Length: 334
Image 1 (cartoon, rainbow, N blue to C red):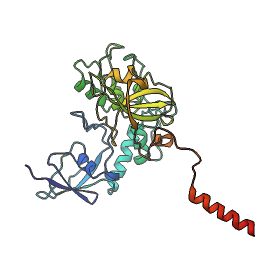
Image 2: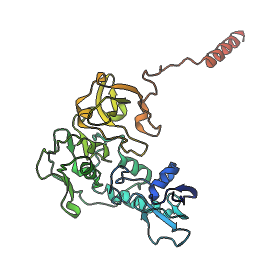
Image 3: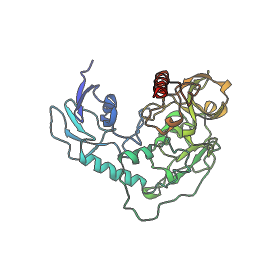
Image 4: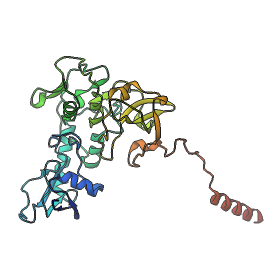
């Protein structure tokens, strides 16, 4: 059994398996020192190294070679070394570089948040709020793309795409007949297909779940509701194609959409098939497990309850009622 490597990130030391990335080492510690990631996806081989949002500063390479690395490195692609010391939020250089990266990602991204179905669970919104600058220096016209129809279930908005390649890796690794990819070069690069309306395989809907922005959205949920007005519930069914573990998004008693369950880093725990996602939107199709836990930092939590039945708006506080009674009696005597 190989010895573990010790790595220090923002002053916190953790022992990890040798060969893992700095990003995954930071995730073992958790909290605010975990670098953001827009293109890396732990369940997709080859992902990472494209968006550069996870840049960190390596102030000490290792015990054997303590020299710092000359430039900021992508934490999702850099493996840890024993004795390595890393600066993330404690480095002004990293914070300033990350602001520039967010600004670059937002150069061509349209301000569609008021109408985008991804609003409320968009990684780019979170990234801009937590790591972005207050303004932009870009004054030129944004790039635009002609709209194309890639399938009957998935809506493509190429103008929102940040070219993270997640959807390409997903289709590559879950299906045998990927029909979409990156066309063009440089500023003309885009996610597209040579033939319209061709994305029809059984797991194509997973490109919606892995997209960090609103470039790929669910046509069956399109413009139906804002995500923070819905209630997510964990459920499962006996599915012959996938594990059948999903999150149902309710509005009243109606299931508006079905998605894969995501972890704290926004990554799908188990990919689901299109039958579960699009064809089973009745409560009777599922075994309900209970309300899905939502972090209180998420806007979705504003209307979320930890029980299947919403708590009463006016709650009976016995201690307060007794105190009011005592005060009322005292006032009467006066």
